[in-house]
Length: 239
Ligand code: SAM
Image 1: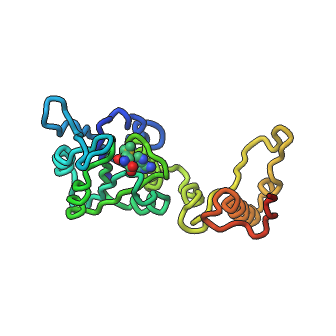
Image 2: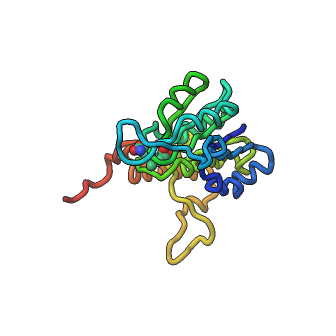
Image 3: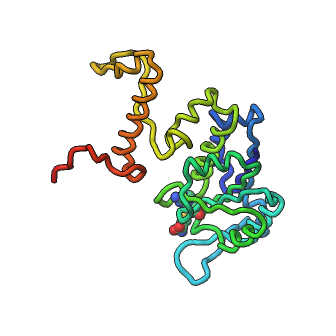
């Protein structure tokens, strides 16, 4: 798989040299290219933005540098990803889907965003996905690009050492779909008067799997009732 990222702050993407993604790149499991949008600017100030038509605060990213930079990157098998707070929510199912793609291009907006004609134009040449990473507004798409690249990369075969950990993660399709993971523990068996739940020391794998599933459900009901609905057995909250 290859991911190209277009940004006016290439240094913002330096963490992609590190940790799991950096290792995946050095092992040839994924190729990542970072492109400076200002290289496609045509004036001596390397401008990439202009005032919004219709007035209003802030600046809008001009279509010309985007078009000139994206043209040689995009093919009909590209998925052009445009981070935006107004996009569809990026989630684990989307990450799973995109991990099967051969080529993503991530277009990082800044200011008030990218001139809408850019997305409309490329939608005629390839698939375009506008996605948000949450209901808040960031200064630019770079943090969203880091989130997307890391979530997708860890699903590629061979990237995470133990493939089971990906299958058993929060939101993973299958048993964990729509659920978050329950609590996890490691040595020592007692820490500051808190003992690890007995069942985890039992060696009974079926019991452990059942307990983990119950815990995942209980935690999802507690932390993310929007995913499963509230726990009908929970005591009613006091006014
Ligand atoms: N005016 C835009 C609006 O109200 O929707 C906000 C633009 S924001 C300041 C600049 C850029 O940051 C966006 O074009 C997008 O690339 C990125 N961005 C901001 N919040 C985001 C979010 N929640 N998810 C994904 N990208 C985001």
